[in-house]
Image 1 (tube, helix red, strand yellow):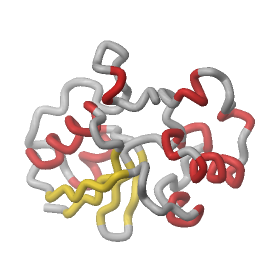
Image 2 (tube, helix red, strand yellow):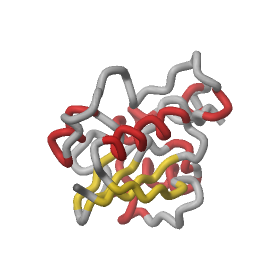
Image 3 (tube, rainbow, N blue to C red):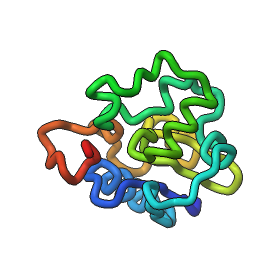
Image 4 (cartoon, rainbow, N blue to C red):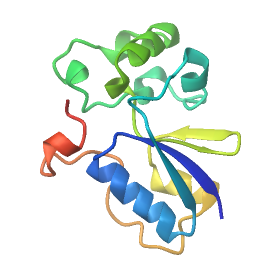
Length: 140
């Protein structure tokens, strides 16, 4: 199985569930604090691959919710600048296995990448549910 470097917001309920799913599938998870990581534009950019800029963002971040950041108006450079200044804007989790990186937790993509087939993957493990404890998931 894989060793997964898992960049999360500590205390986020969905990130905890995602890590549990990876561990149940036999992967080793090395959790890292996404918010305190010393990111550089190039190291952060590597996680986004060919995704459109709008798919790089955590839409639960307050700056997006109140309209301070309008993701559809941003180019790559400005998006990265904003994320480096405010890591809450970064879509979670960021995951790395070897040299391959990905953003978000699309269960089908993760399954195709490193395997999840042996465990129950039902339910939405990427989008924060407002019915969960807000303070623990990243609305700040």
